[in-house]
Each structure stands twice: as structure tokens, then as C-alpha cells.
Length: 339
Image (tube, rainbow, N blue to C red; front, top):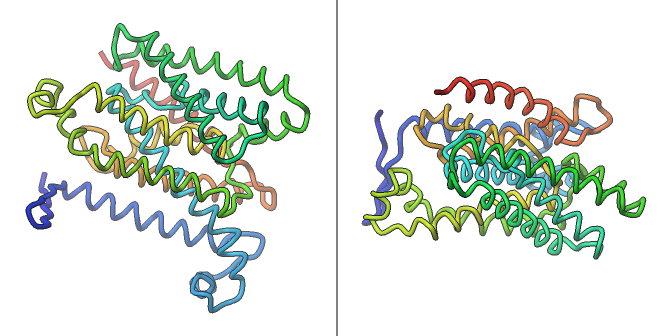
């Protein structure tokens, strides 16, 4: 396969041509969907009116920049974060089913957030910290119960599904024991929704996701070395234990931050990395196509959620669950056929 080499001084980056074309195409699709998201709503604005409003020269500036744009940006950033989280765990487990929503990390993050909501009310920072703590605890339990097979194999997936089921039951019990107003809010939030998000609510999650993605960028060379095999990675100076710990922190962090802001949005982390891998024609699970595919998937699902029963806006998690359920069935059948 032909490759492109980008040089900046002494630094050279080799990129597969198909992966570059895929990334460019996904970026164009994401921009098109974002423009559509800014146009769509109770009042339809033409693309020209949207562009004028973004530059402060037209009407509807408040609606577009303060109401619609935070939601569109949240769909793009949260979708990219979930795509990266899925790619991290699928690379670690070397299994297409090894995503946060399957192995219980989504449910664990939700448990942590619920504990914060019911015990202390919860600011944005407290929700984020509670979600991260819950996700890390779930990851620790899953790893401890599947340690005989390390971070690979169907054992981890089965253990993760079992932990996910138990955490889901625990979450239901917490909601039932909570006060009525808290229980109603938590139940609605559990569907995963971008409805009503504003800049104040997404500023902290965006910053945290930016830090996590920057950390992943720093680790990208070591990740590439590890993908070539453990022995080669060790001989090239990669500390595999430290690398895997940092990757788990990135994956759990991305999942937990999204959960703290929008609730558990399932199946994007499962589907995006595999779709991105097939589009890019990569042997592994590349992070950039996974992130871009996640952004496109979540924004497309949110647009569908807004239009299916308009003027009633569905939680985006309802759409991703419906689509992801069919994808999961197909993936399970495919995995079962492997020798």
C-alpha cells in the first residue's frame, strides 16, 4: 500500500495514503453534518444564514451560537472521545468486543456519577471525578477477575459483561433509593442525551478530553511499537506496563468525562473503531479514524434523534442503542465463527 511521508525538520511521519484519504473524507462528512446540525431546529436556517450568524453579521446569532453550536460541538468532541476510548481498549484486548460499554466501564462511570449526585448533589468537576473513579474501579474489577488471560481473549469480555450486568443492577437500586426528583433526573440522564447542553456545561469536559487526547498523542509512538509485538517493543525501550496503565487511564478518562456530561452513550465506542479500521484498511485499530468515525456517528445519531419524532427530541442514547444493538449481534456472530 502506498504511503505519504511528512517531514518537519528532523521529524518524519509516515502515513498510509488510504488512511489519509479516509481521515479527510470523514472530516468533510463531519463538517457537513455539523452545518446541518446548526441549520436544523424549531426554525430552519439556511447555510448562508448560519455562516453569517457565525461571523456575527446575521440574525439568529443567539440561537445558532449559544443554543445549537454547543450541542453540535459536544456531539463531535464526545463522539471522538468515545471512538478513541473504544480504540484504546480494542487495541489492549486485541478483540473487537473489548469496548468500554461492553466490559462495564460505562456502567462503572455511571455508578460513580450516580453516587456523587445522590450523596453531594454534584458540580461538573465532582461528576467528572466520580465518573473517573467509578470507571477505574470497574476496570480494576474486570482486570482482577480475568487476570489469568491478561488483557486479551473472550474471558475478559465475558467477565466484563457480567460486571456490566451487576453494575447496571446496582445503578437501578441507587436510583430506586434516591429521592424522587433525583431519581427522575438520573433516569432521564441514564439514556444518554445532548439535549440542553450549553457552553458552561461542556467547557470542562472539552478541556479534560483535550488533555487526555494530548497524552495519547505523546504515547502514539510507543503504541505503534507495542503493536509490532511485545518483544520488539521491550527491545526498543518501551515500558509496556507503564504504557498500558496510561492507555487505560486515557480510555477510562474519555469514557467517564463523556458520561459525566451527557450520561452513558453506548455502542459508539464499540462500533466506531471497527468502522474506522475497515475504512482506513488498517491491520490494527488506528486512533484517528476511530475518533473521526465516532464524531460522525454521534452527530448523525443526534440529528436523527432530533428529527425522528420532531418536535420531540429523543435522547441520542436511544438512537445509538437501537443501531448499536444490531451491530453487536452482527459482531457477536462474526466473532463466534472465528476458530
